[in-house]
Length: 202
Image (cartoon, rainbow, N blue to C red; front, side, top):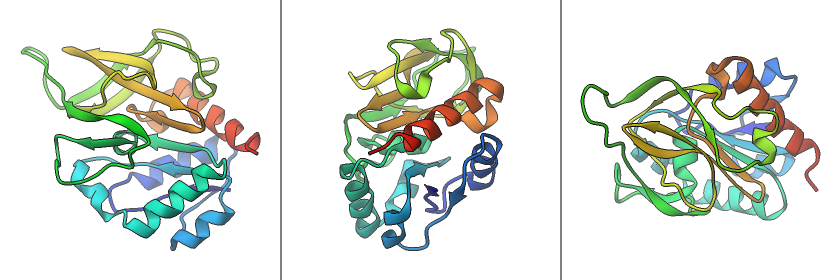
């Protein structure tokens, strides 16, 4: 059972539909203690990094405990950015701190526009369980203004004026800047891969 974290900034309906399409069961925990029955955790999100401040310390602690126990986590869009130390978008708001680095605004000169909205190609840097079977150069759907840096955890990049991190993976912690639930067959492959990591979690 995959726990879908609701902190008021997620496109929960479409993410839930995406997981349902790949045969996964999803629930939205009402309290941090409910994470103990999760086989995996998903942190979705759209919009301003400041919205992640709604994830209170008890939720953060519960998420950390679950990860320490071997439960896989997937951050989607804003959820990926939250895996880092923080973001220039909301300097006073801490990220989860699982990946070192700070997210920054995309620097895209005209005629490119920011926010970056639409389909863009992935450049796969290295393979990981969530990108298994995902071809280099496949297009995914993005909508964001800020992006994560290309640290060692970065497994795929995309370019919109500048190159930014489009997917991360470190241990059982994964994240994608694009929206897999809106990215057709390739996006559903990413969700299916993540579900598989949950099935093999120890």
